[in-house]
Length: 201
Image: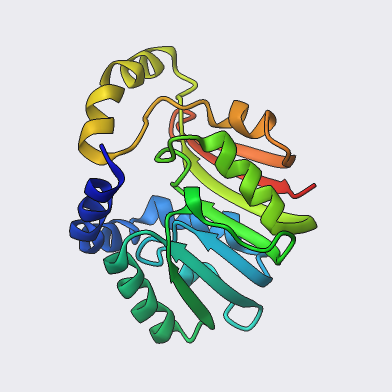
């Protein structure tokens, strides 16, 4: 799926993403991951702002990036409703350039599945955050269950065509092979959901 088609798909799905982001299980995981985020925070692939309810608005200033203008519009509305200080940029993360070591923290949730080169995206994330700054990831990847893992490999080509998303990426291996320093991680829902706390180096 080419990038323009993917952007159109996300524009059309923005309302659905906003509704899905309020699901209880995802909300619990987002809250657990983001409870201590503070400072000047870069959120990449911000979507419709699903993480915004879980920030302490008095402790963060958000720079939010997404390639979907409709997602950004909805995220802007939500930030305004919640009183969160945020600025928004419409841009594709994979071609985005930002000054290095500019942010205190970085948040990325459910985005590494979509990048053509997730390793390069992680390298960028590391460069954008100050050394020692925190990087918070919530991702879905290969299950710890052998049968589910096999099913993910089988359905991945179709999932990629329909949603632009890879179902069978080994998220922990990607992070472990990146410049990020892993602090801790958790796996949920048969090991498919990954919560990852890391540090820029």
